[in-house]
Image (cartoon, rainbow, N blue to C red; front, side, top):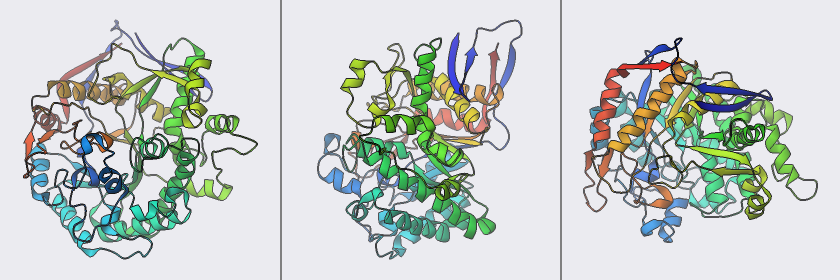
Length: 500
């Protein structure tokens, strides 16, 4: 029996997936009509052309040029997507996707945000690509910010400088103004937990800082306010004309109790989930403020009487609350949680991990991808979808990222097919059995790319790219053929899921 413990309104709700009984029901593997299938990439990971056509330096240009990425890799060329838009259109059409999620480059569109001067070469580039997607029957799903902050803003105090809210809103206005007529889906940010906690708290990515006790919290405060300003901007000035949908893509891995029959483990898992998802989702999808448990635990571990977690004013809470049209989630894996013991807690540096007070582990029997954090745990996707359903009033969900890495670059990737089949089956159960309102699914990634601090050592793509080949040809993997068939069939028509 699979048991998932979730805390809802201070009560423990236990979800089970049991062996089939006499009351078992069959559920179709076909998704509801209108379900949208897609793939995703981001600008820095694929575009290249790092200093062409007026683009300025981003924090990832600075970080990679300093040799801080595995193999001294850079995104200077990457997949050369800036010059290969037709190649990418061809493989998107080959897959038959309904949407393509990609990001804009802030440092390409507004090279110096402090002046606000627009780079019209970049506007033309993205405009042509977006229109070509529309002509091909593919909905652009545009991420406004995906990790690549202009270096000039990093030097100007980064996300802790309150002025960045105005700079970001100016950038969002440009995106909505120039591309809004052709874009249905907008994402203000992708995975703020990653670029704030890992990049500013653990020095695992650009700009490579390790101020885990302060910067992730202070930076997140302005990221959330920036999101809210962009949302209201769209609603007030663009919604009536373009009728688009605005959201934020949040890390939504599943925090499962190590022992679901132990109440302290269930509470630890809920606390970890609030520190991961609730940190950003509760202000936006909840009551406008950080989760109570997060406020309590950060305050408890802060020096003196002042919490390291900033506070929103009542006006800010009201401004932030409800700034969404759907929920976009990145889901890759699952973590087992229990209360941190004294030894584990003593090993934690002051900051986010120590504040949470949760000991995290994995099941050694879980199948593993190439990334250190990525294990095959398909039931965790179902758990995450249900956590969002129960905490945020069954908000419509689009899975904005889901995928698995390898390191060998083969086009025969049966393990990736297994991964997506099993995760899709879990998603189908969440929809048909649990009633989760899931509207779409997005594979990360369309093609192998520059996988941030891991460079080109880890590969997520449905298409293989040889980064030693100047032409950067995209070569179809077996998983691309599998996904193409799933899209064409809108799921698994021959699949009947038994649930007891």
